Length: 116
Image 1 (cartoon, rainbow, N blue to C red):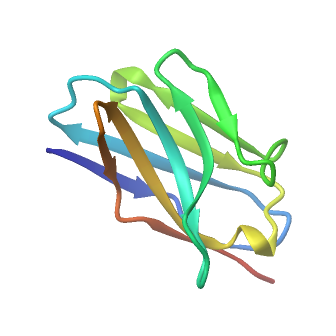
Image 2: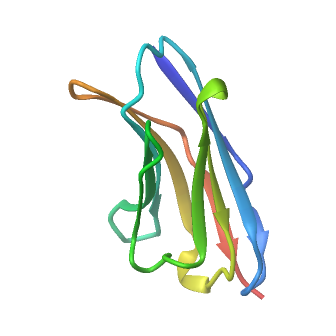
């Protein structure tokens, strides 16, 4: 079993920044990719950013140039630096770990609120 614990969410004003962290623990024998998804009220969960084991990144168009994903393989951790936050970025952000072979795990989420 794999556990993912997110942290770093909170309330920020428009234009502000937050850094999300996710630490994975448990039976981690391989990691294809780690990523961040978000779900706003009344909307479907969507990919925000992902990073593969070899460092390739993928971003949603809506966050390109503002968000940066990074990872620390030694710590089985992934981070999301979010700059120039907009009200539409407000959502619950979920960490995802893809081990391949159809095995993926989710954290419980961390709430990001963007409001003045």
